Amino acid sequence: MPEKILYVSDHGGVNSWLFAAETRQHKGGQRTGTDYTRRTLPETSQSKLGTDFHAITRTEYTIARAGAWQEERLVGLAARLSQQSASWSGRTLLPLPLHLARNADEKHPQYVAAAEDEEIEQS
Image (cartoon, rainbow, N blue to C red; front, side, top):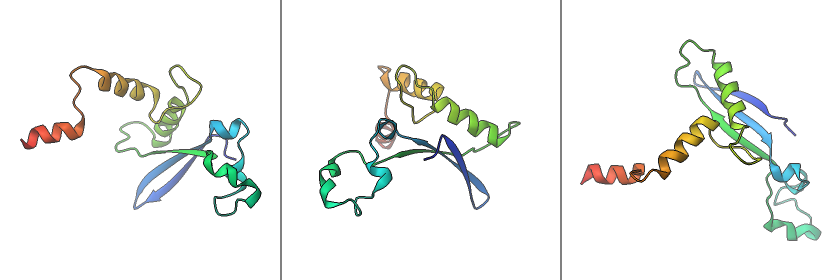
C-alpha cells in the first residue's frame, strides 16, 4: 500500500505526477479492494459488491510553467497542501488554498458556471 507517494511519468516531454495515497475506507479496515477485484471476489463475499471497493486515491498534477521553481518542489507542495483539509479529516482534490478559493467563488451570488457562461456568450 503506498504511503503518500508521488509517481512521475513522462508523456511526450511533459511530466505528469500522480499522488497515490490510502483511502479513508482502507485505513478504517475495509480491505476488500486490496484483496480482490470485482471479478475475483469469492461467492461467499458477494454481499461486499455494494460497498466501496477502492483502496487507493490518486490525484494527478501537471506543471504548465514552473517559472523559477523546481517542478518537483511545486508538485510536492501541491500534494502536501492537498493533504491538509480545511475542517475535516479527509483530503481535497485541489491544494487547500485553491479548494477554498473555488468554494468561495462557486458560493458567490454572482457566480456563473463555465457552461452557463458559454451559453450567454453564444446568445
